[in-house]
Amino acid sequence: MNSVRQTLSIVVLGAALCLAWAGVVHFLPRPELAETNYVANRLRIEHWLLDPPTSNVLVGTSISGRLLSAYFANTPLHSLSNLGLDGANPDTGLALVLSRPIPPAAVFLEVHRLIMPPSANDAKLRELVRGPDLELSRYAPITRADWRPSTVLYAWLKSRQTGGGTVGVSTAPVEPEAQSAKPDADWAPRIREKVKQIQARGTKVWLIRLPVGRENPPDASSLSFADQAAVTLNLPLIDLYRLGQRTGEAVKYTDGLHLTPRSAAQAARQLAEMAGGQ
Image (cartoon, rainbow, N blue to C red; front, side, top):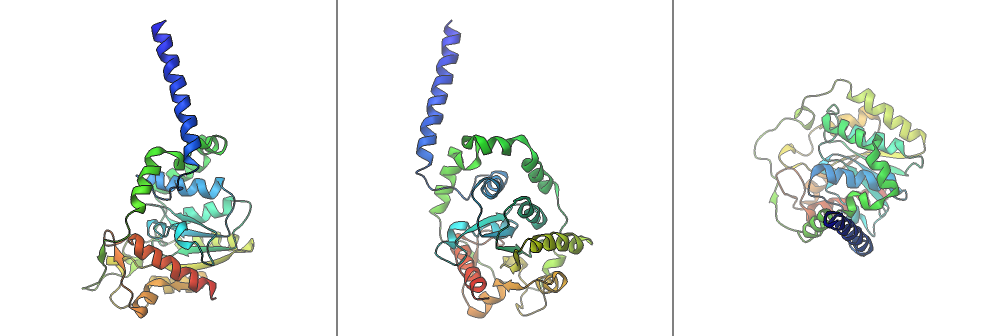
């Protein structure tokens, strides 16, 4: 009997704690960052698939994943979801865009790693979308990634960090972005087909190029993979790397590749201004 009582006490206490947390979490800032890449990706996918639709969506890799939706507040792109998925290919984000019955007004497609084939990480995320976990989160919000206490705490701590990082300056010639990974010969037909399907639903699609630290070419005006991709896919290009070089604004990186929070917020504002003016 003692064992039964202990078990019931644990169940009741657990249920009480869950109910208490459910009441508290609504008053806390919603996390956009997470303690692992997988949980961060789950945050973004759940927001895109389970929350009310937004007018705009940013599709790409961990590079664009640093441009948090909160950075677009009070800009023409204030209604924006971020599908910059860590360790994934932009192809996966495009598939997620197509999976929603209500299309967004605009898709901003990050050009970085566009040439790479989908990887095991992409397969894992597609499995998440098809699996029971996401369906459970639809009806039981407490199972969502943005309800995890550890994720809420992590995101709050990260939100306190605004500076730091190093200025990304190229001191030696580097390979063009398109050659920095093993290319996929079929990237253009694969991406073009999804872009056409998205455009057929009335959505505007833009290519965007973000600063990528050590992978930036020394000469911002030189022909880049972004330029080639814009021609190949017949899409307008917003080149934030060249814009930053022209304006002379310092861009900093946390690891030589990903933007610091301050630089990411700056890039978000620039993107909103350029998209709103065209």
